[in-house]
Image (tube, rainbow, N blue to C red; front, side, top):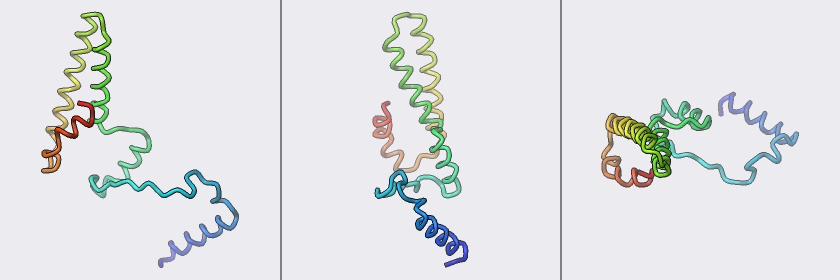
Amino acid sequence: MDIVAVIAEGKIREAIARGELSNLAGSGRPLEIDDLSHVPEELRAGYIMLRNAGVLPEEMQLKKEIVTLQKLIDCCDEDTQRQCLETKLNQKILRFNMLMEGRRASAALSQYRGQLYRRLGG
């Protein structure tokens, strides 16, 4: 064991002895380990930070906006307002499609693309 691990282990044992680690949120439950195998190793830390901050990838944000616009169009009574929303919807769909085409699709993504779109609400 290297010196840093020994020091860290000692600090943890001291904190346990003082009771500082009792009654923590999630205590006694298994850890939820994320499968980040789809994220390149050098991007994982940034990915986790952005996810914890509530930032969505651009394609997911666009997908949410598309669904919201579709719901607004369904509820819209005015023709001018509906046309404005449909224009925005078409722009979002075009941007989403460009993003998806711009990504290098792996064989698995190509094979399951339809299922992914259905699951994402498309």
